Image (tube, rainbow, N blue to C red; front, side):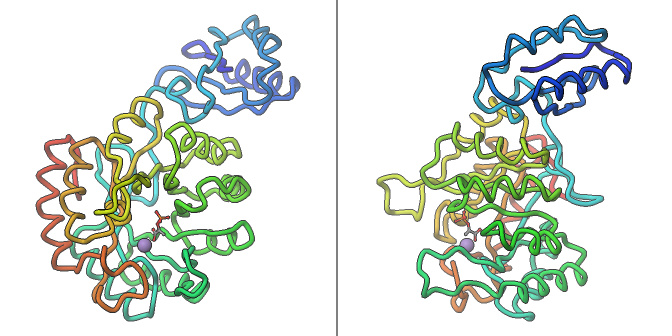
Length: 340
Ligand code: PEP
Ligand code: MN
């Protein structure tokens, strides 16, 4: 249920509503709107009638049910887009088009520092790089783990770029969060509910990838797992879904952008690298994503893709990344975004 407060309601009225929600066994989530606050009361659906009684409290405008199964992620609770702040000058979900770029995996100090310098020069605002890798085969490179996190931190120190890196299990989540600026939940873990709950408690922005066979509703339910633990800083990322098509690694579902924009206030990003699996297709999908309303892109860039430990075939060389970024400015401008 959503408890809509009157415009300009006093803090003491709001505090009383929060207290009553807790007494009734629900978790309150305050969402600050432009003119009024709304409070989501999340818990057992069967207690709707008892929550309705809050309508009689001072300062309450009305109490309305949230119809979607995802509550905090729904546009019903919050009409205006959510902004996820990463650093002083990087905010996702507003006018700024945010580009995250870097290699699939951190491989060595030289490789990650060269990558960070190159993507910064090209105009990326966030560095990407995997330290814990969820590989399909147990015999493939599994990542440098904590040493990789240390190298990412070094690259951040050198370039000033915040970084996003994947967290693959609840046991190592706190370790990753102690280094990273953004926690990535990969496609393979996007319905690992224990992990989603864990990152919901860590207080760091989360980049949540769509699972390869996940419906939009399931995707939003996964976001809800994170948000219901108290973390509202969730960025959704479409990275391709599995279809009958084999010409590309996955089928990049660009229609997910307008669909998600209709259903949720959360920012939406696109990963054209995993979405296509082929560096030739990355630039056109970047332009199309921005034209369709994406808030950001996460792109694999590697200084030497032929020798990459993972995902070389879909990684752009820095020179190609630079060209793509130049052209992207035109699409960003047409879509009402700025690429700075
Ligand atoms: C990645 O970003 O390197 C990755 C493994 O992505 P996904 O989870 O989308 O496959
Ligand atoms: Mn990859």
